Length: 487
Image (cartoon, rainbow, N blue to C red; front, side, top):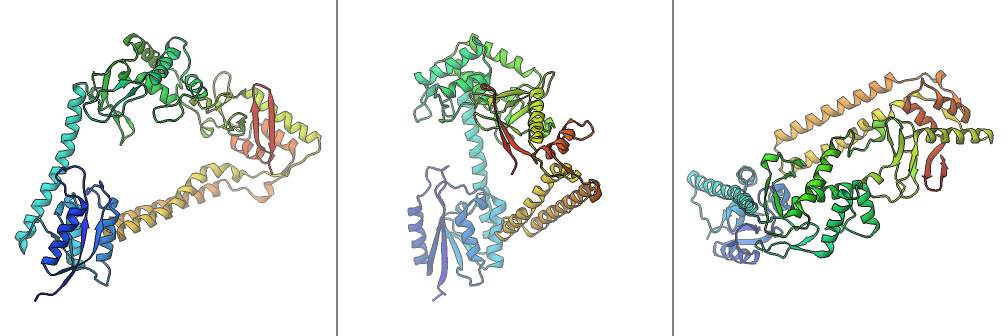
């Protein structure tokens, strides 16, 4: 009598084949096979339904099984599968893992429905089966894309119905107008084309009235813009216009726009009018862009806060520079508090002069090293993240996701980057080093002088001011300013 083999089983059910056996059916056949071939089935690894076999790193049950097979206790002599396609749909990963299991762990991989003869010819047949499965998966993806493209060319819709429409389950169902949502869409177009409102103002008004997007979220500038640009509202179907992997729109010649089978909500004339105005807006300098504090370089950036929502007042350059709540530009703030740069600066100086007269003095060490902090902060943050990355690439190697050579290359690249960052940080500190003799104490009057100085840079002024003031909450409507002093 042959030796009793101890085996495990691996079960995975994909969603692309209708003839796929259920997990219970696979388990029953695997148990029958084990009992008929003098095998002791001690564990069954079951992947959650619908997990793809294309990438082994995304299959937790598979990774657990491989880890157990590599254990020194040698718990299994073989792995039972219903089909080889259950093991992997990627020929490279399949070959890699099977090589490790068979050669290093002495664990065989057996398909109970695809019997293979012993020797090299058997391995060749096995590879042919796996190539066939991988080709099927690749071909299926192409067929699905071609089918969806053909459907779009014929006016069919492949996605979730946008705001203003509802669509029942089933590929043949045509989206129908949802009256309440459609009224919101009509109002958006009217506010933009007839009332000439800004995108952010439209979003603000809709949110204030309790209107919500298709997914139940708040309206933003980009949400309103997407609706105004969507040809679905004039009875057209747009397909293949956005690349999710690259997070950008595709070329116009690659986009499919065809006449749909659904009823329009907006007239073609109003849609064209809206898109002409959008095009004119994009040609304006700075349209749709918000300057960050770092880009503006103003020493008051992020110090002034909106009293309504708490967001920072972003600095806007121009002939008449000013600070304005950045959430207002996205339609997320009702008030949108605003203050001119001239008034903001003078207000700060007045506050400091008032504090100086009251005899409130603050010790401030003038340190030019503070000016390099923004330069080194990002490098320090990246350097800290490299430690985590080193742990992850090591874990990827241990879990057999990466080969030893790939692990060595990734580790070397990360260590080289860390060394470069350390040298850059050290050099920056050396360049900005100030002898202790150059340090001096400053009270409110000294800080006022520093802010008025033309020789000091913006970062030095910002660091000096923040020793005294933590934030300023500005209410444009009442003219009230709440000053929070630094602790």
